[in-house]
Length: 275
Image 1: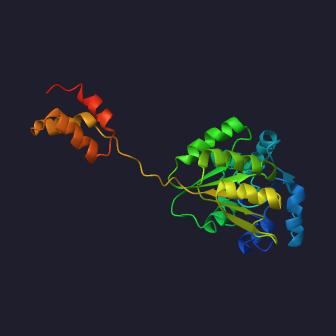
Image 2 (image 1 turned 90 degrees about the vertical axis):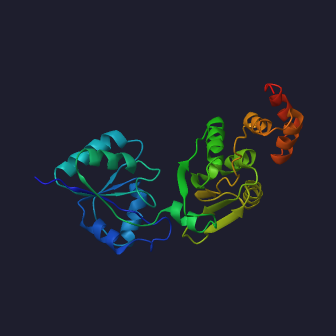
Image 3 (image 1 turned 180 degrees about the vertical axis):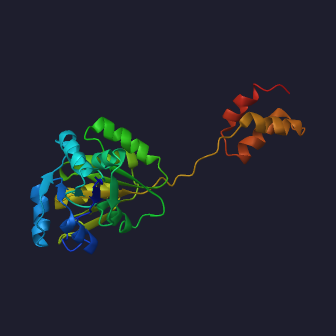
């Protein structure tokens, strides 16, 4: 018996018109649709008059339901995997099912479609040539600070997700760690009240404290633009001048002036060099 196929079907992140013709065809053709929340997915299916069996696959039944779905795929069933919104497998349980299907040598077919991270990135105004998708940060302040310290060093743009009830505390931590770094915050993407705010973490905190926090959020963070200062080998520089015939006092002065170094620091290193 031939094995089935697992189709990765992206669904609209807000506007129900944002679904491809191919995705609609696949949803109509498969034997079963595995949805993160069947109550949410049924609204999409009803909108397009698609009548197919639904089963729930979410973080709380990921192990037992995963076994069941893999067995159905081995039996030759075609299954469409969908999340509540956007691309399955990105910050959702679909990642595990996809990996299990690959390990079971089952064909996995990804369909292109909407994803909140890329949508937010391209309207952020920040560089898009290189970027990192970080997903959700930790809900624990201590761990979140540590993650932001890591992100602070990245040279490229970083994309993160955040739930509405944690947005303000996240922005407070970003002020502490990132300072005046530019950020872009998008919410309710593709929906009626879609909004993107661009500014600093401090400006964002003031804005959302005033306007309120509603919807799911995608934050895009500017990369670190600070130039790395090359390490200066003071001892080598001093020795070079000494070898050229300069006296130690003169060598200290030249190194200090040419490399904008504190004279007392250069002098301290010079004490370890014998003329």
